[in-house]
Image (cartoon, rainbow, N blue to C red):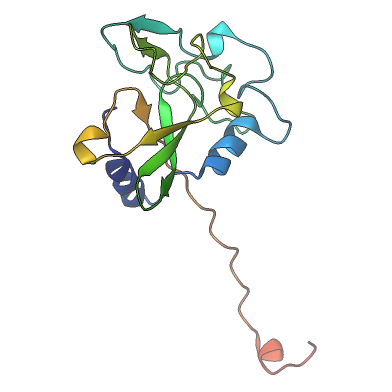
Length: 172
């Protein structure tokens, strides 16, 4: 992907959406039943990409490669194990970071400091884990294992126009 946080935000704005908040990402992945994976409570090899290590990152799989088996209860594809996904930015007087959700299927050889992924130390089911990615500057924020998705807010219901009886206060 190699897209920075600002580039992801700009794209979503251009497309009429925005980046999801962490709780929105979790709701889309987990639904209301507390599942551990978007597809349920069990591991499922055909529901997400195979875990890979090495010195060459071959890139993420297509978003629908594991659909519909790996879809969330709302039919959202590829929320787990392909690339980490940008959600909320956190800033204080000293640092900036972003919460990443979903996990990546790649971990470089010899990188024990790298984010815990499934199969790695400290890993857990994707619906219950997140990582904090420190932001240093536009040129340092790009990674092949971090991506994004856009969410779109539902428009507010249209208010029915006031007819002559309601505008005059008759029958209200």
